Image (cartoon, rainbow, N blue to C red):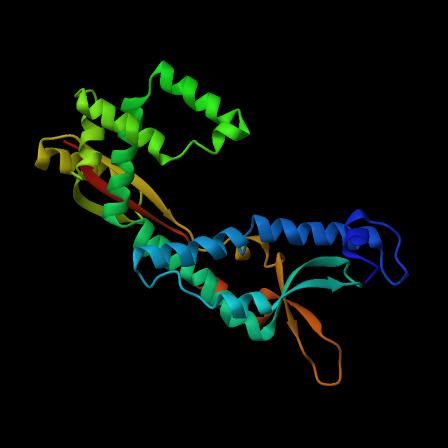
Length: 267
């Protein structure tokens, strides 16, 4: 490539004339964009392992070191493609990473206790909102120094104050860990089945029943014609070759995103 990475990013002329520096610069920017916010970005790499560790569950575990060591910036001069590529030997690590994310959605983030607690937390925060609280939040968000002090403790203290004054039933339940009663779930509901289930449960419980939808995500890779990531393969006596992901692996065709709907008695 050229003299320095910064020259490439800025699109400056190169000491080599075999490629367009602007093409390379734009491609590398796209590469970094995918690594910051994409189907295989550093945020997902972090929170999968972190959530697995702190929850004590085995979902979300994948071979991070192997995945990182096989990622490359791919460049095909003929097709003018520059972007994220992975060595063929790292394909299993990529598949494991994507499936781990699917599993953690399906088994942890849609768990009845997690979803019910989120419902309770949302209601506690809604009950805590006042003109003063809204002003405080805006003040914290508008100043980078104040923002560093805007932590979970701010709302926890509001919950405690409201609980002491009997102003927020949801905050009291949240602090005393009195969870909403779980009533059941629907997986990939069709037609009007959500409303039908809601009516059925309300008749049985004679109370306030609500539901929460949880999208079980897999990957958007296959929806982008497999063009966002390419696989680098070796051919005997030839240079490395870039292939479309779907030409090397059928894994990403096997899974679709789903929907889980959890129902709760909130009284």
